[in-house]
Image 1: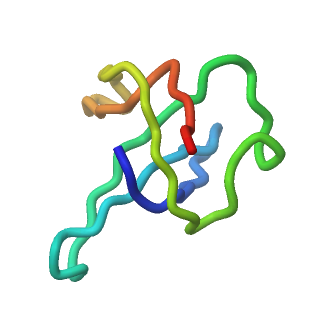
Image 2 (image 1 turned 180 degrees about the horizontal axis):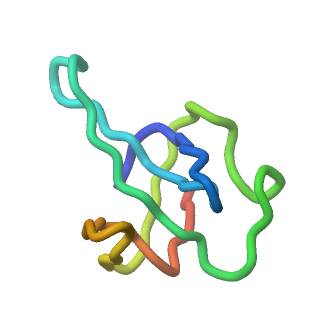
Image 3 (image 1 turned 90 degrees about the horizontal axis):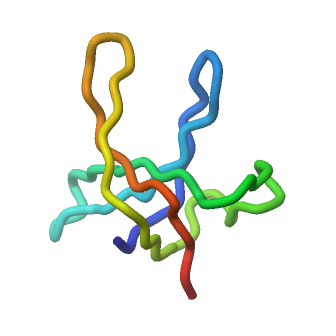
Length: 78
């Protein structure tokens, strides 16, 4: 997926996401990702708001009785 790099700081972790705007740029949707390996934030991540392309394996997880989608074992490609 291709979009802008964003984060959301939760209570116990930082959520990394790729945010994709719609055709009119009025709305956007993000998909979280977890980079493969043991990356450290912010050293191993791009600048906030920068355009990124992320590849990974689609996965779902439960948090507070809600199901969320994400990419796991992800890599940011040039």
